[in-house]
Image 1 (cartoon, helix red, strand yellow):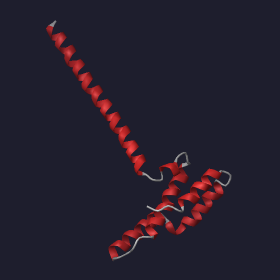
Image 2 (tube, one colour):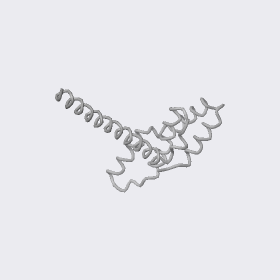
Image 3 (cartoon, one colour):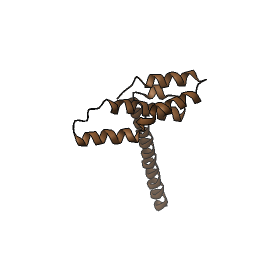
Image 4 (cartoon, rainbow, N blue to C red):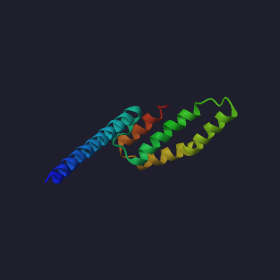
Length: 121
């Protein structure tokens, strides 16, 4: 009987530890999610937008940012060029125009894309 009683207490203590860890993990996930959302100044602009529009907003703002950077040495120039290549900045206007055509009847999407053009990190 004593062994059963000890095992019950042991498993109960273990359950409390596991429950506490799950609760702590959930709380940390919640905090990290909200901190990341708070750190993204474009979060309000991206809210409720289609995925391709959210990606385009990031490209527009990223290209604007990198286009304004100073290539003060070779390493920095290479960094800027690599970022602009990764964001496909050379074809940005064409891609934005295609997206505007696709969402021509969705006024909110068109407004968001125009607003993104005024942003830079």
